[in-house]
Amino acid sequence: MRIKIINPNTTESMTKNIQSAGEKYASSNTEIIAVSPSTGPASIESYFDEYLAVPGVMEEILKGDHTENVDAYVIACFGDPGLYAAREITDKPVVGIAEAAITISKFIAPNFSIVSVLDRSRKMSEEVVKMHGAEGRCKSIRSTGLSVLEFDRDLKKGLNALSNTSKKAVEEDGAESILLGCAGFVSFVEDLQKELGVPVLDGVSPAVKLAEILVNMRCQTSKHLTWGFPEKKEIKGFNSITKFFKEEIK
Image (cartoon, helix red, strand yellow):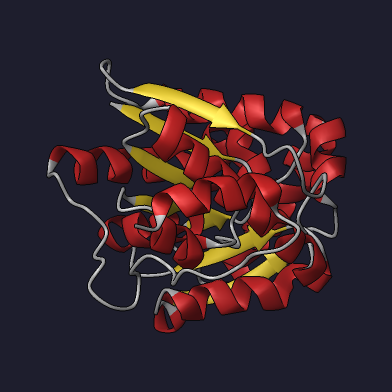
């Protein structure tokens, strides 16, 4: 089985950490391929960043289907950017890490809080919770005030910020589990769980396990209506996507 994890930003150090998190709980016969697109922002903290990242995600999925023999995909950004569009261009399973973390949390805690990056990103997290139908289970969304790249540059500072913010979510908001709202937080899971005494989930590892289950069950993305392949039409300015797109749409 080959699972391709797409880090929608272009920061390679983060992609390496994501690869390690994906491999940690993967089955022995699963190959994990973690990549960053050739185009896109260094980090994703705004709608502008997110929309710029989506074409690169689409290109990596089309490459996976056409040239890499990939069985399933994981989109490794907590905003799940391009998730539904990705499901339109492949019949392979595509799992978002926010979707995975929210889903797995249902089995181990009655509620959760999300701890994320900048204050401005809060609205984006609210929309992801709503997108996955989990408003009633989300106790709070708290931000650390640090950017994604600050976490990548200073792991100790990042861990302290996550720890302090997560404690407030548990003690003040009544959170019984913590979801880490950034794929760049994968290195902090074990330390935080020991310190907080409640389940802590990044989205990458759960997404890989869910992808494995879907492949083993031979599940394919429905092409009946909503997630059917896009209609044929001219696309300008995205040469690599257009190349694959023409081959994909029969």
